[in-house]
Length: 364
Ligand code: AMP
Ligand code: MG
Figure 1: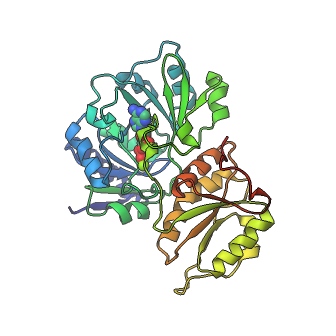
Figure 2: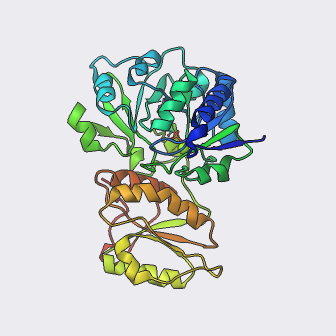
Figure 3: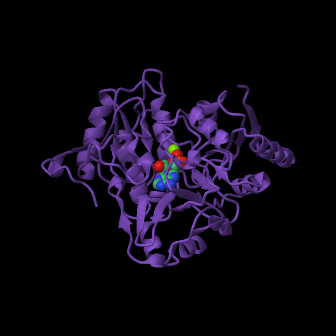
């Protein structure tokens, strides 16, 4: 397939790019577009055949449902039923537009192909102005997973989308880097409970300040046993995994830095914090590429969120056999960074120094 790639920074062609994108969607085609979380791969959510094309282009298992993206918060209840306690309405008015996805009982207008056969639908209203303009121009809800090949880190830059999907989709809208860089927070809302299925930029304390105490799905931090099924089907897949195995290192700062320095000498790559850099300077692969990638300051979760997927993609391109990473704090947005890293490393945490004999439960 010949993929059109349009640069949105050229403002004179913005309107025509959007018109072409909307036309492509209305004809059942696939359009990748920027959002504040990560880039999405969109199609008409009311057209089952268009959704099937998304699964094919990404190589995504058909039981992993898509998020439906809408232009205005009020549209949530065109496609889903509110819960009996008014929790969904509260969440929508507090956090939409923005990086929150709510999962609710679906209305029949949403095809089974979009929800992987579930009787619930996940809905989000992006705040990014380009995403909003694109969805509004389409005039239909947009089914959109992240615009990466299945199993690769989600794309936070247009170049990531082009790397994965050039030749597999009709159109790629190239905008700015994603402002947040991690996928949306997902909450399941039923008449009985609110449950966090995937952590993101909207944090547990923020959610609880609006709806009271919420549950956290086990799959957010724990490895599920064989046969256990997460409530968000996508959480069961080995996501965000680079070619080289990733291991998170838990220890005192000085122990972790010593471990990293030795690992670098051995040809491994390192994902660290800014504070570690002065202890790790000057390492590169034989081709000269650096193999130390800092996520940002140790206590700056927002910067870590923004850089994580770029780190995984960047190191994936180098000839490294092993990637070692710092372990982010699990408070606030740090929980989302931790969740994505723990999946990238297949729940592999190595404990060193005084943490050496700690049991394997690192969680919550
Ligand atoms: P992505 O679009 O790549 O960020 O993936 C969407 C995520 O939303 C996946 O983890 C899905 O399993 C999850 N999801 C979508 N629809 C539902 C639903 N109806 N119930 C639970 N999780 C869902
Ligand atoms: Mg994804």
